Image (cartoon, rainbow, N blue to C red; front, side):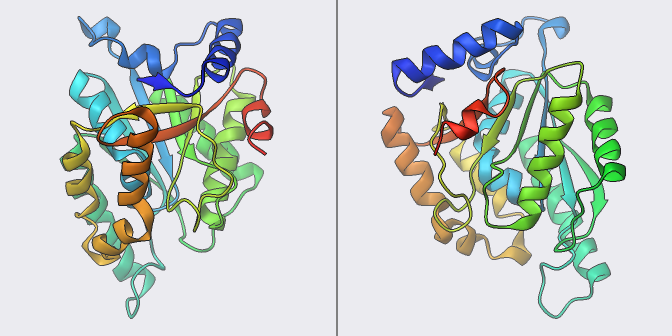
Length: 255
């Protein structure tokens, strides 16, 4: 695990030091020696296939090290299969997500919102706060809030507000999907080498048969893994933006 330029890396470390938080680089530094050292990771995505395509390689890496990872899907992809009713599509995509989590060895949780009609209100904020609190996370991943897909935005804002209101300030990292097409103005603070889990990630994405896996990679994910890898100096990588202890500082600083 490495960060981008030294000044940015130092800035991130300084923000974390102020809160005493464990960071993604810290978790990836060494395998847990016992149960007490194992960490709990949560990834909160808008639809089935988002967490897998956005940070599946990193999630697999964390699981392979011995940590526990839960993927929470805000929706079940009800609007994602042409010609299928919401109920039919949800059943198909839920099973695809379960299959993908089997490949990544993660636990799937479904929040219950509807694809294409996601809601950001106080009731749902309380629900998401409770769902995340139940997992007792040491670190959380979610969508970059400036994605073009409104479901991604809602997922991200629900997690950001959970982070703001939580007495347990877990480290929060944003992942990218279809950069340039969906994720906008994304300037990474952190990178993870996924060279050894790239194929595992690909297999998890290909579990989402209804979503045209070649098309998922064709919209930029293969290029993203290659480009982020080139930035880091490895075969393949995933990139993240870290939300520092200064609240929205890491987001505002990306403009």
